Image 1 (spheres, rainbow, N blue to C red):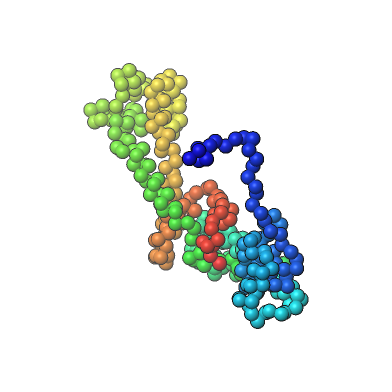
Image 2 (cartoon, rainbow, N blue to C red):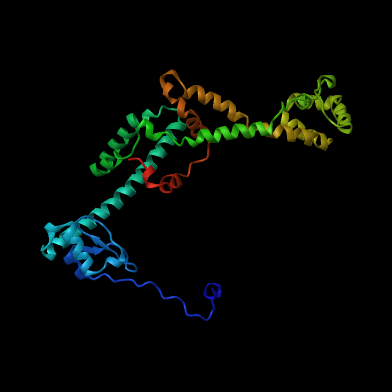
Length: 315
């Protein structure tokens, strides 16, 4: 029992590191190359591509793999396996290149999708007009190779539509809006919209007594009434703040949440432009389209493209 309760002494020697076998270039005669790193070598078969553990770096185990998995290759010359090794390395480079190209093509499709959404055009225009025009320009200015590379960009109507998580974001935003305004914010605050024609008996005023007296002074001030006709609502209350700072501060605080309501009006206009009879299939991702059309914030495409799992990247 004592050996389990014994504390580790700082002076005790450190545990021995795990023994690692080294790769021998002569293993190529068994059809194996180093499929790991210099620090942790591993055996990889040039025929089937199977990578074995470091412990398998033994001639007997490599020979057994060759005889059981690839008996027809037993007795082949070293040159044969070296040629297989060249093919394996080319295949690795091709996979790396294809992975990088697919991510770049996906990012390019997102960039095009954002431009299309902000121009309030149908997404099909990317596949039918933007891509063919870009291919023709590249073929003329750069060459056929660049034109073929552009053809790998996925611009179909299904591929270009951006992130369905936008719908969830808008739903959460609506819930937050209900939290901010559980009741009608106009009730008791109509005096802000027109301090010269308020009706205290109709719940237009909900102020403490000292602010009610200030409001009464404002409503009977003929000079302020002249300014009311010349200034917009916000500018008027800023002018009032010089004489009635507490009253004006309350008015400005209630006006501030509505300074960006123009986005709502813009949203309705864009909705009318985006959702037409000819685009009746857009309903499922309408929120995402509106988000891209309205938001001035550019998406972090590098995070979307290069930070997502490889299995989610569509070609």
